Amino acid sequence: MSYVVAKYIRLSIEDAKTESLSIENQHFLLDNYISTMEEPDIDVIDLVDNGHTGTNFERPAVQELFELVNSGRVHCIIVKDFSRFGRNAIEVGYYLQRMFPLFNTRFIAITDAYDSAEHEGDTGGLSVTFKLLLSERYSRDLSKKIKASKMSKAVRGEAVFKNCIYGYKKVDGQLVIDEPAAQIVRLIFNLASSGSTCTDIASRLYADKVPTPSEYKRGTGDHNCMWSYMVIYTMLYEEQYIGTYTAGKSTRPYIGSRKGKRIDESKWIKIPNHHPAIIDEALFKAAQERVSFKPEPERKREIGTSQRYGNIDRPLKGKIVCGCCDRKMRLSSTRNAVFTCYHTLAAPDAPCHKLKIGNNEITGIIYDHIRVHIDLLIKSGETNCLLNSKTDTVDLITDNKLKVKDLFEQFTRNEITSEEFAVAKSCLTEEANRLKQVQLASITGDNNKFSIRRIKDDLLLAEKSIKQDGELTKDIIELLVEKVYVFPGDRITIAWKYSEDESVISN
Image 1 (cartoon, rainbow, N blue to C red):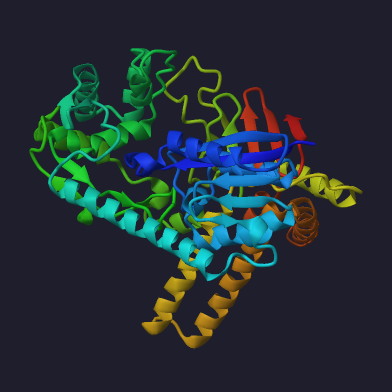
Image 2 (cartoon, rainbow, N blue to C red):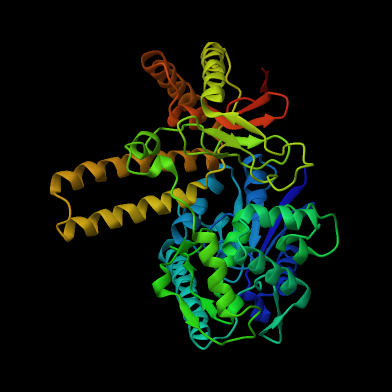
């Protein structure tokens, strides 16, 4: 049997500026080391993550590496140094101490002079721990420097964004009017100022077969020209069209996060007369006045109905998807609420144009099928299913830590009592332990056993809740339903989380 060696190489965007860290140099270094290994009949697997941060393990190649280790198909992993594998000291230490020893996988970091075969029974001592902490510290310092550099450029009015707004193009770091797109921008503002709604404008652009901003950027190819009313609404409030430079609209809550947090508009950086304007300020304000002038819906007037409709629980909200265009259907805020496919609202020839289904109608259908589905799963001798949640466990753990920190700060500022602090801290600790179990299960290969046990416990609780309350809750929907697809002709398909099968329903 051959000895399988996995070469793992990572290069982030910032690392690309350092020649010694290039992919070619890492390949050269690793190949030279492998040539000196005494193992006979070596098979080499190349795994490369190009342009990915090392602060988390949400990288395609490293995830493939874990799958290989988990299936026992890799005997040795070789990296240039610890930082190429990861820059999070706790997580890297976990893999070195727990996961790789569990699967008898050797780990070598060449320039850090670390070989796990020489440290059986220990983790390499303080020197390894110190290197991991230094690597993480370097990543944090680098992130702060990059943010500071981008902020200073923004204050000077230098374009630091990757993509230009629709209607402009970037030439030598400057914003220049892209005339074909600018003509569409002017048309949108003129239509809005003359009284057309965003939906009317979307219908006009669809009829004229005008590519959407994303389609225009993509260039050649098929264009469906289905403008979203929200895209148009956002454009009508974009100050860059009158020559004002805007930056600093969002930030990332922590290093490695993929989610942006929007910043209050009062803290944005704005520089008037920064670049050529596509429209004048008078037209800009006129369009906004016409779009923003809407009579207040009757349900929100002071007749006692806003409370009646606004606080109604809608457990299926966010789960109902159009089966034709695969877009989430929006739920109206009325007493007789309906789910509507808004993506094709401006396309009268689309198969799902004005596709609707009542909230009460689909809730009743899903309720009946969930009762049957729960009963089948509980009675099943084998639950051969895993949790298909797309939730990023690492992000949830980090969010949990931030919540604990915020809670402690509230307590120190005397905003909450010691009893409130103790109760909330207990809940967060319990959630943190659960998330760690999920993460541990997914890493060590115990996912099947853990998920099945937890699924059965949750199913029993869901069954009890349905029998007692006789209604669906958000928790039950989140537990069982991945998506509900609605098609024309009263056909509905339920995609279950704990089953590869789908329930097809025809009314």
